[in-house]
Length: 146
Image (cartoon, rainbow, N blue to C red):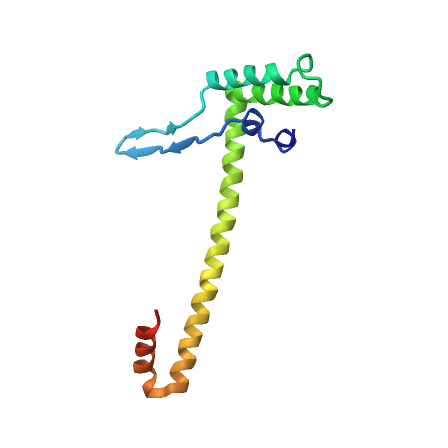
């Protein structure tokens, strides 16, 4: 139910989607791709849905939330078995993943830039303080460090 409320339809069915899209590649006047690898087949989604529906159906399961769980299961299966809705859903997932990755890359770049600038300012200060002896001392220090 938690996965259904957050809109994670693959998780509602207990399916891991490892879909990878490669391409398209263009050579001269020809295009190759896009190639899609590891896509969950609609047949597998229907099989998983039928198995879960047997256990979650309100007539078989007397839990108070069985009807809500069955409705969430039906809704997820309907979205993932319809090709147009599934493509829209997969595009939404991919765009969200790209936004998260972009944020992560930006933060890593910001941290690495800060580290590099701090290191450069430390080296400049060391050169000013040590004067003409700074280069040999820095080289020896770098060799001593593990």
